[in-house]
Length: 445
Image (cartoon, rainbow, N blue to C red):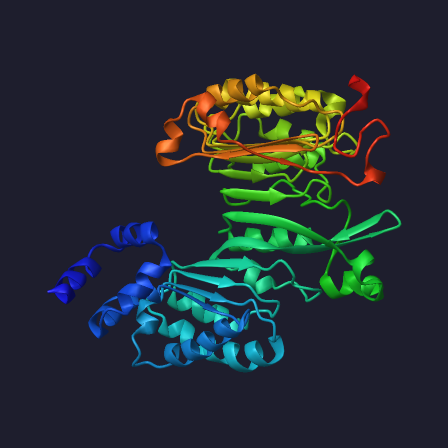
């Protein structure tokens, strides 16, 4: 009887099964597979939906070797169950990836009949035949290129210009030599325009000069880098698919007025859901995008008063006007070095998005930032009734709170009482003379 009930459970739609097992965790699937052979066979399509071929640990390496054999076997059902395949990362790129994984992909990629996504997380460029097979046999599948440490290998142009490319998250090399800038951004732009499919773009940067001086002289010829400001050099006739996520460090990318104005024209920004600007708030970009990202749900930005890319020289209103133009904001992470900027920005955030916010993360760790009184925390919690995650760092004190399920129904004072508090002691060399070892400000005594 129990086996029959299990079979009925496993024949529910996958969406419902996911909800059931997400509530109980991965252990529930393992336990189910131990009940009987029938349960193990019936649950295989869930267990092998996502496969990662990696040697990141001893267990992962052993399992990957076994999966390679099974996925290469036409008579094994695992390849029919697999929907998502991840290649990498690899610790032993010479033997494990070059000799074992990559040759096996020749049969694995065409044999995975129902593949929905391929994630490439390795330094090694994808073999042209493998990429062609992926594009030929899986015309609707998505390609994710996620590699935070590709070293100094040449940029994989075939990969970046693939019409299946959905996500690009990899370092872009640039050279800053005596004020003369060269970068790979022009190559990246051309590849993305050719593929015309990118949805998630996370731009990381790596300076060749500071990390590998020996290749500095050959950078332009080796990488095909272009001369000029470190940005996309948008021009009339350029285009880019409507992005859903954009992450870029304004400390490395030069957001000029002309570049931002042109970028706002060559792309439809209405689908953007996530914008990460690290600790920056580039005024030209925010000005160009005001009223163009109404559906933005997550914003990460900040104001660094010592940097040249903050908006203070033209007024804080550029940042606050941009935030006010968003209609669907649910999460915000904001960091600043000036307490008044924090409070001015928070006022706009609460007035415009207090009823929709689910996550609020604020940080002002400078010594001059004021500590909030309990009533100030309560007032913020009052204005964001649907808040699920809360974090405020002021000076050396951090308050964090998390509410879900029944705890979301707590009144503001009850939520305040559940906050967790941490205090960070700063090294003596980083403290002004009027700050005592325990954080007490002697100016008030």
